[in-house]
Image (cartoon, rainbow, N blue to C red):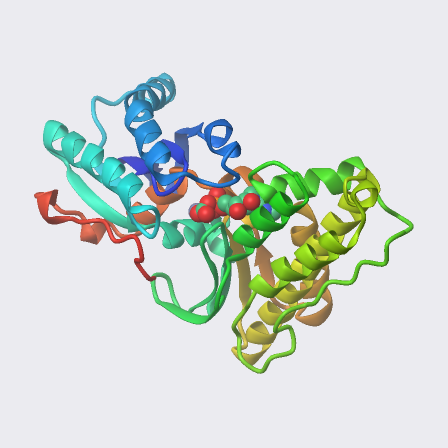
Length: 347
Ligand code: KG4
Ligand code: ZN
């Protein structure tokens, strides 16, 4: 079976082609056309520009995806199309959905509506399906979401906890912007720490770990952003623009986020006696987060299996939408005209 998948939920135009045979998934192509350079000057995604760029990019990205896949596999047309219908930026989602509807009509094949968050979860299922045991806990950390999702079996999702305000990725993006670092903030903060290591802290920056010890499983990251702003403002210009201060602050931002995410995830994992913990979403591409998660899980819940997709599969891509489409192929529609987008779609 050949599945063509499309994601235009945010600022990347993504098309992938997967081959699925005997339950084995092979990625034939996975094209991502990034708009980062366009949105960088606004310090975040500008929805009307993102929509325009998707409109420009979809045809060349499709061409590239088909050409790449056909070099690896002979096929005339895909058997199914999977497309993200939410959550995401509404104008951007409509561009992807309408493109998918046209292809479905032209090729006379069924269309599967996909939830983007389910895609981030199932990005883990490319290669490790056998090792995954239920109940499983997924921590989804992206630009728009921070959710702890319990899975008793495949496709059985229950949101156990989530952020009450900013998402983790949003927190990385906003705090990076305060420090004058480029969008997207997560990779900029990670790079800053690597480039200018601060083994001996000079400025004694201590940020809060919001809601780390609260009894529920929710998160809150807006206070962290405010704390960064206060510290930044109280320093004189020479200090706050120095590489040393920015690196030390970047390290403390990253660590306070890591501390909260690990503490809450382990709490849910223990309370619900989960056998697998997986991460997904753009923030899961953070190497330090992965390293510290691995170490803490090994120490605190050693019987638990832990998985994170490779960094390229953590950030937005269409291969994950194809995988989610495959798991939801029973939802495929022959006449997809009724399918609508839902920018606030819940899992
Ligand atoms: O999942 P994603 O690609 O798009 C959404 O669905 O939102 O996530 C994007 C978010 C951005 O906020 C970005 O700053 C963050 O993921 N991110 C990272 C890293 N790479 C991307 N955060 C921390 N460390 C990274 N290496
Ligand atoms: Zn995403």
